Image 1 (cartoon, rainbow, N blue to C red):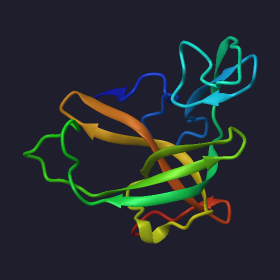
Image 2: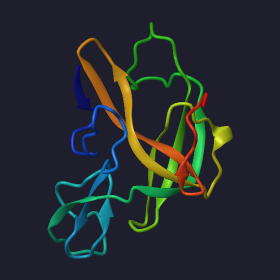
Image 3: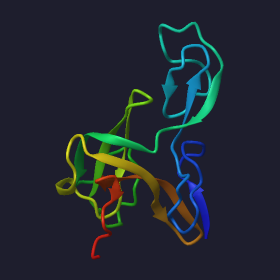
Length: 158
């Protein structure tokens, strides 16, 4: 099956096996003021105090700290696109503070990670994820996985 990012250019391509030590979210940095942006900015520096400079692609920090989190237990209304015939599966959203970039990035928690496993301030890392699969394509994305003492949590059922 073909692996396709849900949004091209927002993260590095993950290896099919899933465990990829170089997997990162990708942002842009202004060469004039050093402000970092995610999603990547293609046109101009969004810092209102900056006269503007060139924008360069940069990998973002692999690890951050939980800033906030919530669970999504219902199908969002339009304009959200989803197959109304498909069963809705709840998921956990995590807002993660990346200290070096001075920003908060939102994403889904890794499969099997619910709100009961998260705490504000705990360390998490970005890992490759799958948003959806169809007969031809695996639609890839990123997930946030909790770290306990600097190491990933044991897999569910282990």
